[in-house]
Image: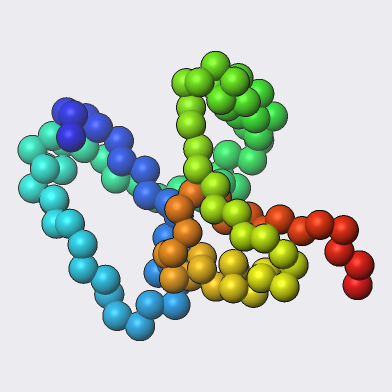
Length: 104
């Protein structure tokens, strides 16, 4: 970690229904050593900047400066399973469901 680093914490949906506190890396000494800051955030904290962010991030993707991953599940019938994957931490990147011409 760089000195004065800022560490963002988000995307913890896989832990929402956890019955036990998960164990993980214990690097608190590095936070002290580097005087880093750890802060949680929600997307709604930046709602007023949505338009600017969409424009800039889209440009970064087009220019190859930003890459992303999607986990695509096919078929409306698989929506429940795709949703549950979020809580189990099984997907990587954005979880999507591709639906073709669905009629209720």
